[in-house]
Length: 106
Image (cartoon, rainbow, N blue to C red; front, top):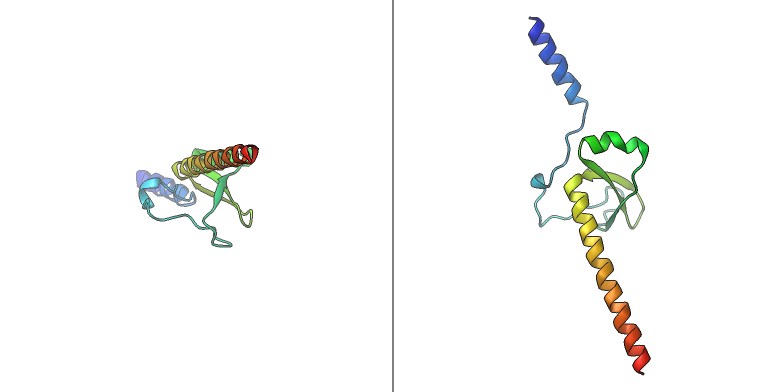
């Protein structure tokens, strides 16, 4: 009887915690969308002290590039967002360098 009450209290404690979003539950072909504006463009947001609880649950803050709404997503999803932003930044830098070199030649 005492064990059953202890087990139920543990289960009740875990039901208050939202389940972490993992990469396996989201197909690679799907894109994240902002809950407010529906934009698929995100960036990784800065960490704040209250975010520690979410980090323990493997959730990381991201921010919508359109409406600036801050959301928490799975840690591995945030890593994918960071990698995509890094690739986008490198492509923009290469394009600027090419444009600057062609402007000098003219």
